[in-house]
Image 1 (cartoon, rainbow, N blue to C red):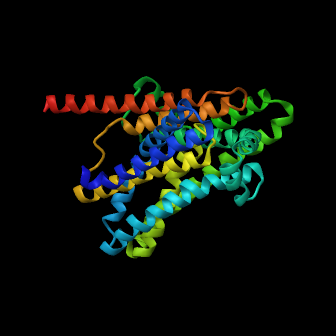
Image 2: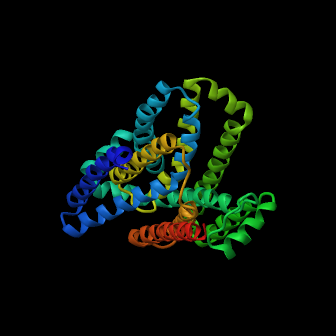
Image 3: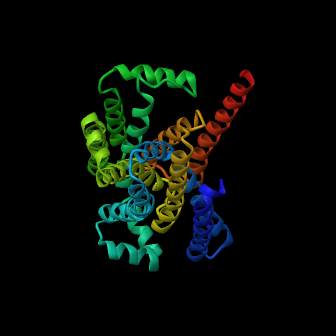
Length: 343
């Protein structure tokens, strides 16, 4: 495993040291430093779990690419994934939400954390509404699917799967929830909440349409013929897979640098898992891990909606998400043991 995860381990150690130092820099206390360290770990674990299927898709596409383009994707591609989606995109979210310039956002985050936090808190309603709507659609679209064959929490997931035959059910459910929350937020914030939430729904639908276009047989055959085309195809897919993790990170922390560290660590593990899947010609061994990841997304979306009304401590948010991922991993290991015993 060291052959595949060596670089990921090195980045993990460096990233966690930086997270601890950031916590000490901003708080000046050991408890603050440990809090940043824990959030960094949770962000990395969440990104790894949410991107598990990303590694599988990447591996399937990389098998069709030439060796030189495969190496380019695993080097240039990871730089684009880490610095583009995990650093620049969160910065863009902050810039748009707070209506300040990117240089000003970076300067405030580095030199005036109190002022930066004040601006972010002022834009928190928009971020929470947008992220809650987008993440809920991501999670429900996975659960509410007639073609889904495996259930982890069988009673609930079976009912959700059976709703997949109702056209538009997922979007209608989220719109109804948005309407209910819009009546609960203060009247002065209703317009901002509705605009951000509906923009989150529109963004999800746009990503879905793009995914269907790229996933069509003609498009897939076309991009598979050329190394550059396949490279660009995988970058778009990575952006789509990473979007929920980036938005979900704002439910854990509003610190731009900590988000970049945690998600960057996770991106390195995705790269390592991709290489391992390609070279070993194997698929996911953990049956329910993906279920735990999508339950985490659903929990995060609920918490982000709730945060438009009340403050939810970041520790609770992180522990709930990590608990579902951990429980799904334990269930997967148990299933594997029972399967081996039966054989």
